[in-house]
Length: 211
Image (tube, rainbow, N blue to C red; front, side, top):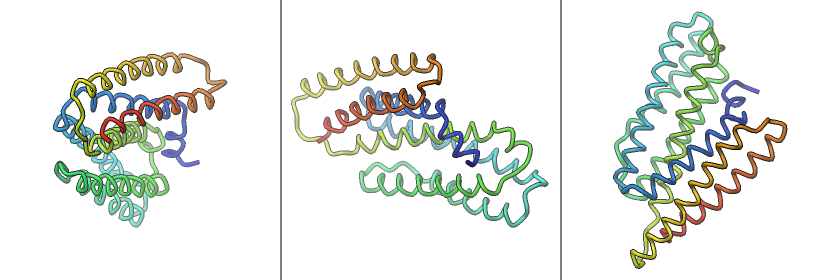
């Protein structure tokens, strides 16, 4: 298995991803849509910073053929273009932007995994940063997708009550997630499945707030 795929498949990164999703959902419940969009812009900026590091290390590497560098550079630039686009305030525009970012990210990771060699890439720290930042960005994109569902007319008190219920569930979930990290990895697969199912239930309830 390739290095980026190996990282994404690791228990630590899976738990990181679940934590990122929980935090992103929590933010959407406690902040305005504008603040949520700003969080997304910050995650995009952070990922662009890692991409600049990847680009710099690639250019210095003597172990990567020029043709391979060109292939990676093309995908990297395509991802950078998508990350540089401004805020998408409308639902359709946001969904289009989200789809293009995720597609460009997947294509970049695939070619980088295959083509990049050298000390910095073999050490793994760049991929750790890349996967971490990408996971955080993906979480914000998913949480905002739910936020963009048109909110129907409801009594504000009822909506706020349901938000508070979800926030309480998220607090419990985050505490459980923290405990799971402390447990030996003998039952890692079971833990990851259990925690993902718990988050899926909360995400479903979150989306229903905006139906």
